[in-house]
Image 1 (cartoon, helix red, strand yellow):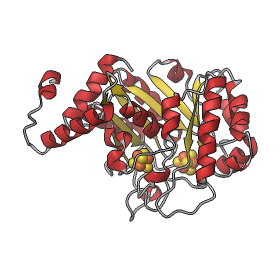
Image 2 (image 1 turned 180 degrees about the horizontal axis):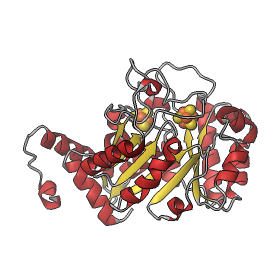
Image 3 (image 1 turned 90 degrees about the vertical axis):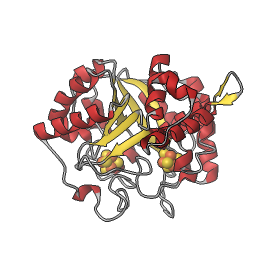
Image 4 (image 1 turned 135 degrees about the vertical axis):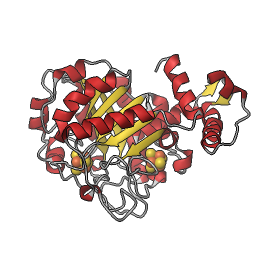
Length: 333
Ligand code: SF4
Ligand code: SF4
């Protein structure tokens, strides 16, 4: 991120907004992944589920998304689902409209179908393909977006692989190494990211890692990032998996991202997982990345997180109409 973008993000926070926006652009997905948080009963806070929401299609979807984008003016926008490629015709219109505004766009998909080369040739677009484990495990979890189908659909593209590590994977030594060896060898793969499965409070699922498995992940990722340049995870970020944010209000990612569901009005809180996520077992790569930024000390002294916290307070006070008497606010106006 450039300095000018950091300042724009900071200004947005001081104004009571969030620099990142995430939109579930459709309720539909052809996959039925075990442990999928988007279709969990509490994702929208209880009551209706994502599959029961009414969503939009065609020009109405394009117009409504652009209205939201122009209202929020995010620096970074994630389009998720369901699977956003269910609405690939609308995306063909949306991608140039969004990036023409200078917004960084991330499209998170299972790659169950092909997508235009123009997207990954656009420097503001990152297509992130979820690939959860080696072929035998992935194909069972994520059919019809099987390895064979993904490899065919990403041919000639430049994508980021994102793998959510589960307890099942960590039962086998060197599983992550085999995974990286396979995907790092593909010319279509630009970067590889890992998250760890994040449960809801009270969940008991085979996907959840034991504390020992979590420690092993941290050790494995440290080794893998040194051995494979495509593993795009700084060591400071990997370290954060050992001590996730204590709560959503301590999570810079949750505080800096607004998430909206497929009816384009329901907010997803407290973070993209919705419901009651177990922060103590959080494995979200984005949360860990921003926690690492928060731990950084400006001039070796002041933790960036303390500046974030003060800025959030100023932003909230401004939204409530309370005058913030802080010089930095004036500087950034
Ligand atoms: S692809 Fe994503 S949204 Fe669809 S079922 Fe799997 S985890 Fe859920
Ligand atoms: S991203 Fe993780 S740490 Fe942040 S609020 Fe969600 S579960 Fe908690």
